[in-house]
Length: 124
Image (cartoon, rainbow, N blue to C red):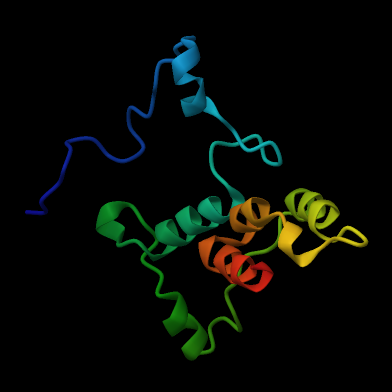
């Protein structure tokens, strides 16, 4: 038998009571570009996790690298979110912007931590 942390499936009982206390408001922050509690990069990681998860864990059980290797797919990659990308471009590609004034937090939120660290290193 599979060892589980909970008797509930991952999609059951996903609920959190909204509390209006001022000290808890940071728990309800959403990203303005998507009006979601997840960054774009987090949504992509969740989707990929569901695609590759085993059927026993309610996933699709796809082995993406194998599908590409066998020629069933030419490539698997996420598409850009046009609104988020446009917002980032307006913030990042400003004329006469200095390398040390890059919007690192926005770059990290859109592309992920590795790319954010890369541009932070370049701008330092």
